[in-house]
Length: 341
Image (cartoon, rainbow, N blue to C red; front, side):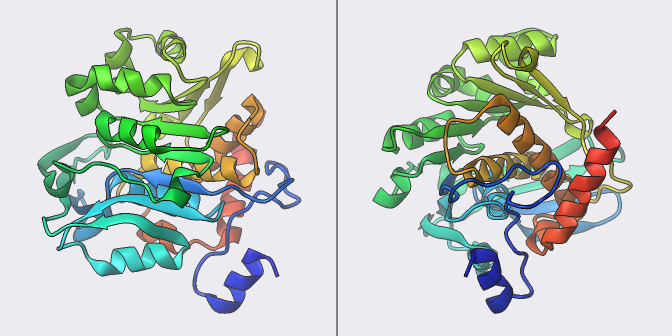
């Protein structure tokens, strides 16, 4: 019995895995068993207000979104991070129901990471009202032996020091490592971030951060400069305008431009970039290898884009907690029709 069949029998209310092993135009065939993924980063409590609604005590944190998104493509899928005494247990229970392993999640007597923010009318601009680092302030990454050996590692948004710790603890020689970052780390921990970039394979960053990191307003030049800093692939996120993939010049001129899936309504874009990263990693792991081609990275970006679009349609992870596989496939099909010419 395959994993999809088992899930359908035992957890009919939950989504089946979105494996790329179907007769579908944009989905590459899965030639071998999926590889495990380990996602490290922040696990947080979010309080979010938008022009039309607000919600509190939501599941937040870069690693939470990324691990959940990866679970649609591959198993096993593990989460690494730390939560405080006040962390709502239902959030961890939901992740576990999706097959996300929690052996790498530490529990602290301190308070959890908490973010409170408000989105403005255009949903692109937001104001952060407060950030409580709490348990992350003195946290150091530790990996159980089985997680350290995982061939696909995701260094979701966390301090470059924590990212370096996770890199140094990994033991798999034939591994593929993806990493994300944010403007704060560029500002206060640039040397550590540069060191992280030397040890990873794919670097994800948004457009404003890309310009700040390398000091050029031109994104094409920025992508090329960041590739020269270590990673073989660089993805610049453009928010509602999609993403740009940079790779070796001999592959498709080293560029792929992907649009975003157009949404009629955006309720809460929090975590969309982290969902994108997790789905991208999960899809790659589902191919059963770590030596990916440019086209396979490109296919992963398309899937990350589609899964991320669902995140924007509800607060927190609510929309991507209960996604039927067919709905994902249908939106991917629609996206293909919209994008081809």
